[in-house]
Length: 163
Ligand code: SF4
Ligand code: SF4
Image 1: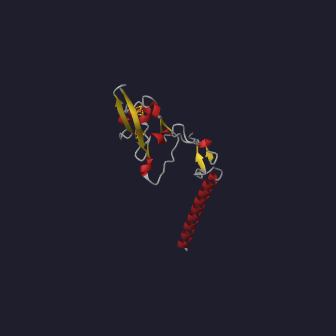
Image 2: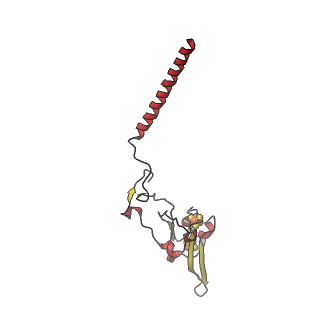
């Protein structure tokens, strides 16, 4: 008889504990009910990027003096600066400039140290491609300005609290 009573008490305690856990989890569920979803329906919705986003680099050919500072400050010596010294005018002539975004770590050193500010970081982050060699941007690809997210009327833009 005593064993039966003990079992009944144990069972009651376990039932009360289980009911408390269910109640707690239900309260947590309820507390999330009036929150907005964290995820967005990309690519139909896009976040407005931060002004300091380190996206794809933009390059202005006319401003570049081929000093190669960007190469020296790059942790992987990535930018390729193709120039020739014009002896008559004692000046470097720039022919080609390229950055391979398949290798770039977007540290921003080249942008920060360029003496003529011909490099800048854009808000473009959609660089996926089927062929990684397509990520090697020459001066023409680097000169393209990306469309700003807020100017794209085909999508819905979302402002985050971190902006
Ligand atoms: S640091 Fe600037 S100016 Fe010098 S080579 Fe690089 S991009 Fe051109
Ligand atoms: S962002 Fe960094 S890794 Fe990329 S090219 Fe510039 S210095 Fe090199």
